[in-house]
Image 1: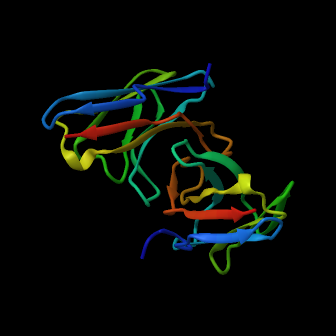
Image 2 (image 1 turned 90 degrees about the vertical axis):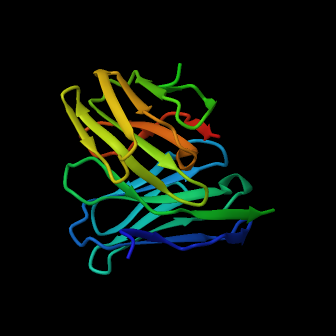
Length: 112
Length: 112
């Protein structure tokens, strides 16, 4: 079992819809959770981080964490074509270790 | 100037050659990382360093070595390049406040 698993995708949604991206992790002691966006040929860019159970909202993005079920999700409301990218889930398994384990990513396409 | 600069951006080298990828940062972060990314896969950690005297192997360090010349500089070397080291290589930095990584633009390496 991989330490961090994401929906294999690709995921396609119409413009204006909600895109839902999911990630599960194997280590129950995981501490910090991140979502990165990566455009084709570019480097990953941090868009959300979450440490505590519940929801965290930033603009059109909402990260949701459920440590009991060991999953973290990213919701993108009012999806735009510019949201089309690969989204990487990353988990810091050790507290303050500062090194992240990444999932393989989910590619999202938002169709006009 | 970019916060994290990687050189070269692209490199084609022959099997058996030694090659160095360089990374420098202006963010003042102590923590630096080298990851590789293969098509359709997430990022895998090669080496990481929490300060000049603290260097650690990641999950795929075989065939690679690193040098932390200063707080701002972290180089990755392939002592004898082989074709399966063809990949996109990213340098990243972070600070201890656990807010995720800042990535460089990446080096696309092809070993022929």
